[in-house]
Length: 385
Image (cartoon, rainbow, N blue to C red; front, side, top):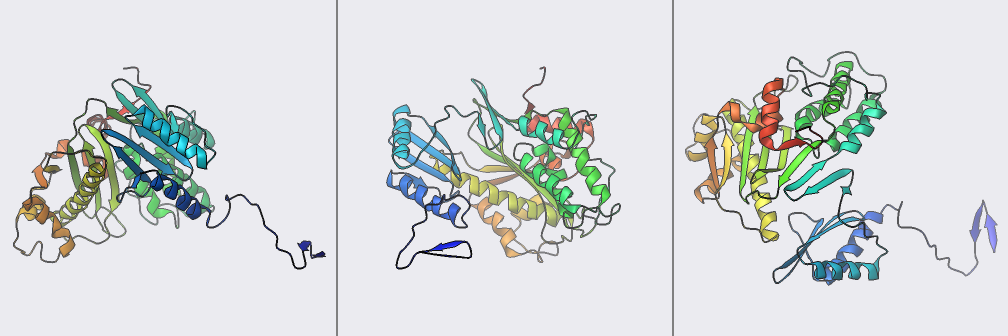
């Protein structure tokens, strides 16, 4: 036995190191391989639309497992099959059954006979406490309608990591708060070189969160199983790149299940083009959700309706002739026409006042902002009403 530079060496021997999987570079991959192997052996099928989702069907019984690293949610309509699944997992892993789900990854799940409410109240209050804003004056909207933020707004911040950490936390909070999605995507563009105006705008979002920390998503138990979406674009609204901001929100019945606020990858030459590109991206999301529901053995009536407030963009979806307005648009954007012809999608016009996706593309006045929130099914769990 030799000891050299603080390390132990054995001649003609092999040491087996018993070490926890946590902290190793390949830990997450090896854990996923092992867990997937056990579930697939038990009769589960891994979803092709979401690799973290496993589905098992046995006659009329359905068991669904959603996985995030080593946290799992089990959902099913058969108590006996659920117990069998838990027993199988216990034979291979040390697991702890926490009972009916109340918290998952910082998301609070409030259940009632009329539906389910998802919010991040605890996380929001901890965020306000961390930045010393528990006593701040609440604000009615997350972003000032008159604010014109750009790359050089204000003076550079010395500690840029402070701004990046704050935006990262707000991004996670937007999981259940579509109302801050536009503000967060706007502020996340300046993480490379943040300025004072950007930080001030981020603190304004925190003051808005102070107004209703328990605000979140409401999923009604009596909602229908129909897919519909709202699509919108704010043409050339980015002052630095002149790219358009697109936004969409997808509903399953009356429940909001998907949304996005994002800057387009290219510059659009007209508002019609930017709206048309937004329609194409919304169509992709609808197709993905329909495929996911199909794997869950949930059938949705077709066609899926997409609401848009731009008549020119709607005409482009039905016009197969390439003219001056559309001949420069990439072919992958025109796939929406094929799905319209097949009867899968149905674009329809909606007035600007009732365009719900407006909330995801631009800052809005307080009255209109609150009106769209109510239409999207965003509710405050602790509201006096």
